[in-house]
Amino acid sequence: MISVVILISGRGSNMASLLAAVDAGTLPVRIAAVLANRPDAGGLETAAARGVPTGVVDHRQFASREDFDTAMAAAIDAFAPELVVLAGFMRILGEAFVRHYDGRLINIHPSLLPTFPGLHTHRRALSEGVRIHGCTVHFVTPDLDHGPIIVQAAVPVLDGDDEDTLAARVLAHEHQVYALAVRWFAEGRLRVHAGRVVLDSPQSKCGALIAPQTFAG
Ligand code: GRF
Image (cartoon, rainbow, N blue to C red):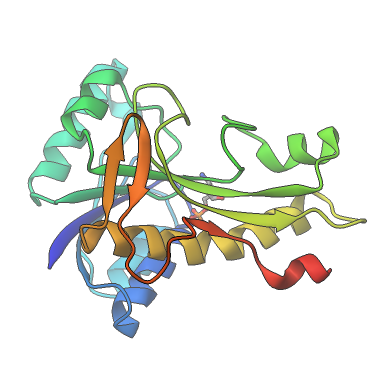
């Protein structure tokens, strides 16, 4: 069973959904640790309550981004994980860090990349008037929010949505697709070829798009 380290910055609901999937027996990985860059990250308590080792590498204690990255990498590597999962981790990681974890560092982003990289994705989706929004799990590359896409969930934007209702609808799908992506990684089904993810999926040749029934609206 592969071992996984999860990095968080806040409430950690994506992390909690991964822990729940492990507990439910649907995600065959060992969560070795949950690490945060903020001591007040709410998800740390959730993880500790489930008996998962936790740690903090407080970015405010470091003079430079590189120094923080080096310390965070040391904290991660102490657990020798096969996979590092960014789950609401709100620090930009430098190129050396990203290269160190090449092919074993994944992120979830609350938009259908490549649209809306960066912050405030729900606000921007509403102000652009898109009818379909969603979330993306991708391998991390030095180019922010641009790595090879593993899976996406499409989520409708409904009349009357505000940032909160849209964020909540997307988040519910984040929780589904992240467990799926981590499971595929753990099962060795993901290959990156020419910058694109090829999913070796005997059950399905349709690729990695989750289009929920909520489209009936
Ligand atoms: C999620 O929407 C994630 O995609 C984004 O920040 C949010 C974190 O939520 N990067 P949580 O901490 O997992 O609850």
